[in-house]
Image 1 (cartoon, helix red, strand yellow):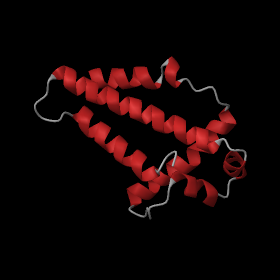
Image 2 (cartoon, rainbow, N blue to C red):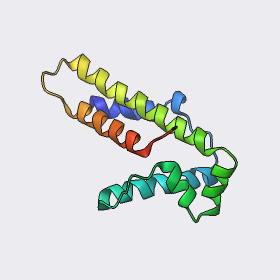
Image 3 (cartoon, rainbow, N blue to C red):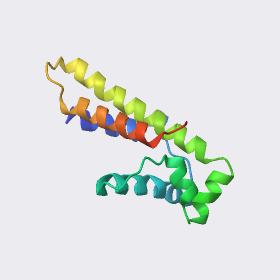
Image 4 (cartoon, rainbow, N blue to C red):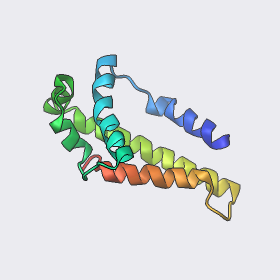
Length: 121
């Protein structure tokens, strides 16, 4: 429960405050959802998130890329994920676990996904 509350505190905290409009939030959700769906179905072919954005048929997603906002979205998502992964590892260190607890497995999986997305490259 400690991990869940700590992650929720970070995700909902001022550092991670989301000040974008509903339209932008909806537009940026699509490529991430598509990536996760490809992962779940086993049909991901190594595309970066940016490649999925460029392949999008959604005008608002393409506009985010064209206007140069997409790179900032990628950087913000990568930074937030890194902070959450570090928080998970801090929880593990504080608990002095001999075995890797679920928090470390979550951090490992999060870092794996961020790496596969090639965020901010």
